[in-house]
Length: 203
Image (cartoon, rainbow, N blue to C red; front, side, top):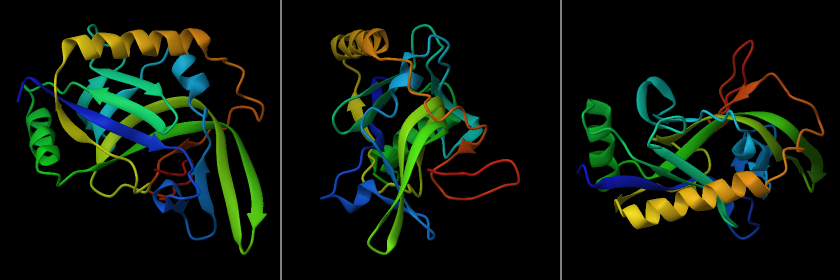
C-alpha cells in the first residue's frame, strides 16, 4: 500500500447540528471554534508530528520532513490532514491496514491553548477553544473524543498533494499570528480528557 495516504479531519469545528463536534468532559463540554488553528498553522517553526494513538514511538509523518509527510490546512469543516506513512516501518503498514478496514476511523490532536471562552448555556458549562498556539501532533486513534473526526485511505495523487501544499502555504501566508489574546497556557492538551499534575489531556 505504498501508493496510499491517510486523509481526513484531525479536528472538527463546532456545528450545532452535529453532536460529534462536541466533546463532553463531564464537568463541561468542549468545542473548537472556526479559525482556532490559524496561529499554529502560520507558525514558521511548526513541527507537528503525525502519530498513532498519540504515541511518540509510533511516528507516521511530520511537517518538518522534506518532502513533507504531513500536510494540514483549515477549511470550513475543521483541520484537514494528509499523512504519508512510511511503509518501511511496521506502524506505517499496520495503520494503513487498520484504516483500510475502518477499524480505525477517527482522529485526535494535542495542543496548547492560546485563547478560549467559557460560558453557561442551559445547564451546561461550555468551553470554546478559539485559539491554538502550538499543535504538537495529529493522530489516528482508536477512541476519538470528537466523534465526527475522520480518517480514510486514499490513493496518493501527486497533483492533489501539490495542490494541498500550495493551499497550506497560502494559509500560512494569509493567517494572522495574533491569536494569543489570552496568553500562552503552558498546558499540553489531548482530546481524551485524562489529566496529570502538569498536563491536561484533551483529544
